Length: 166
Image (cartoon, rainbow, N blue to C red; front, side, top):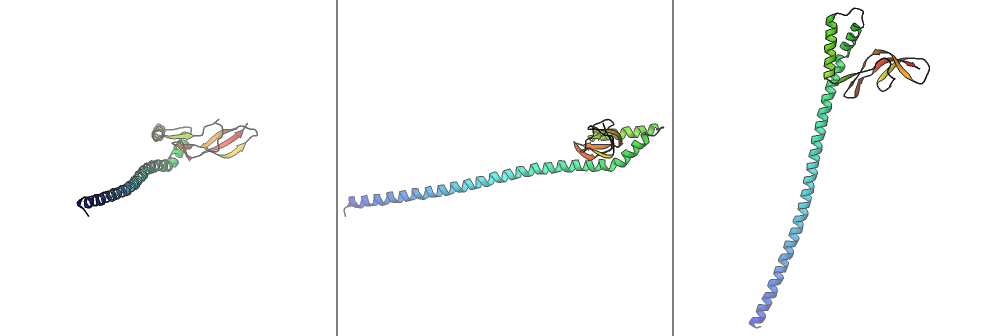
């Protein structure tokens, strides 16, 4: 073989080596790209899970706070009922009126609303009927025997009422 033939053979071998190197780099880059996509997907899922966890824990914290206040108010019901009975007496001392108004202001501060008043339309979702009289289509509250209470729109205790149909 001549020198020229040998050099042309070497050039062909060198170019085949270069193309195989390029193919290896391309394969490695596609593998790395797919791994990158997988890692990116895993990261996005983890970030979404963490965001959901934060929202869920904040919601649970709010629910626990609301339940604690509702439990506290529930424990005050005997005191509230006794003040209502004391205020319905013929002679009420100034101290009882003062304590009752203080208790009412505490309940307002806790966002607790009273439910049930004479003349209201009967609503079985917030009223508990213990007596029913009359015949008719419209049911109205005749007498409130025990007030009911709502906390943040949720019923804590239904109002105990006598209902009259008109």
